Structures are given as C-alpha cells and as structure tokens.
Length: 137
Image 1 (spheres, rainbow, N blue to C red):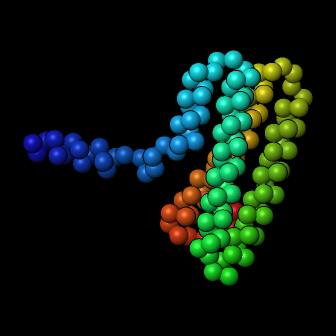
Image 2: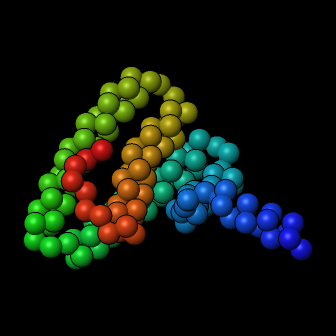
Image 3: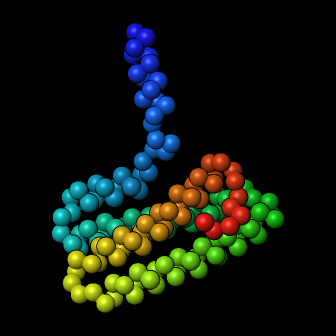
C-alpha cells in the first residue's frame, strides 16, 4: 500500500505544469485524420482561428480585471505584441512566398499559428496568476 502511495505521489509531482490545451487536442485529432497537404493546412488554419479567438477572450478578461493603470499597460503591451507578430508574419511570408509547391502551405500556416498559440498561452497564464504584463517577451 505504501508503495502505491509513493508511486502515485511521484507521478503527481513529476506531472507537467499544465494540461494539454483543448485547441492542441483538436489540432492533433484533425492532423491524425489528415495525411494530404491541404487537409493538414485546414487543420492548422482552424487552430489558428481558435488561438486568435482565445487571445481576444483572454485579453478582454485581463482588461476587465485590471485597474486603470494596468489597462494602459495591457493595451500598450498588446499593441507591441501585434507589431512584433506582424513583423514575424512578414518574415514567414518573405520566406515562403519564394517557394513553389503546395507542401509549403501547411508549414507556413503552422508557423503563423504557433505565434498565436504562444501569445494565447501567455495570456491564459497571466489570467490564472493575476499578473499584468509589463512588457512583451
């Protein structure tokens, strides 16, 4: 009995800090059924849209919790992130616009999606911890 308790405690203590996100789970399911190029691109595109909505929802929740001074910081931080996002999107476009073939389409959409995923998870973490971002990472 003691061994079972110790094994369970070890599993709990070594578990990852966060559970898998529902958007990631949906994406994995979609990709597992999509072996062709364009269906995979559609999977990433759907996840992209979901992460975009998640950013919007989390941002609004953070603003609702923030005081006046914090709201200004949140708005400035989000604007700076959007500028950085746009620059990163342009780098992706510059790289992939020169390539031929449909195989690059999912890669391009995936890279853009990952940028949004990163921001969405950051905002969700800030919501959970109650911290207002001081700057863009």
